[in-house]
Image (cartoon, rainbow, N blue to C red; front, top):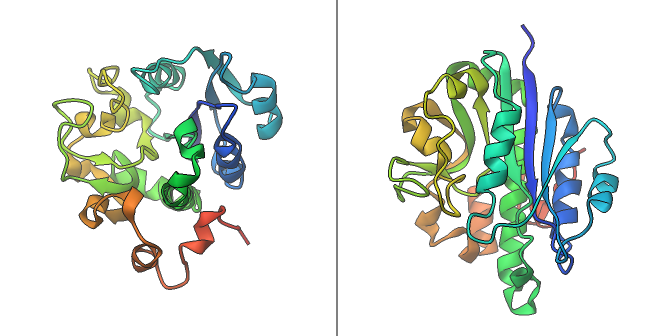
Length: 251
């Protein structure tokens, strides 16, 4: 049977930071990866770009939007819980990708954070690339594994939940719907800002996860501190950090 692939996505579109728009433009490059439900949670309020502009940027009438107020303490946790309920399914051929618009915080607007912003862009764009470039490969991986993603980290345990023994640093990941929603505790998301990042590590043992690109990123002192040489060392020979700094150009 063909696989059905969902998207659940979270955006906090601050008015004084254009990174939300760059995130949308990047994920849309891989739009053909999603052939089933597409659900986007968008934070709204005085600080944020209106939902109309978000819809214009996606330019897809098949997206279902969830509009919510910002929760500064929990961040993406509450939207994530609502998104999960929208795609709950026991279909073994249904897969779901979760990500959020990364780098949108107003603090990254400051010029002193330029190096940090550069690394965030490379980080998120490599995750879009490795998670979405080959949907058929994801189908095969999730026939054998419960979940997959990039930058798998087993050094920091207990992230978002005492039960979390590993996580995908950056929180871009796929999961097999049947394998997740067959668990009695699937709705238990950690009750702090890291709850979503540690979620899969509290649901599945590490052996049921598959790394699409690079393990243990904190071994280099943290994603935010990587030099361009470090990025180039991580990437295969045919790719460089500059390929991802401004968004990967699909040929």
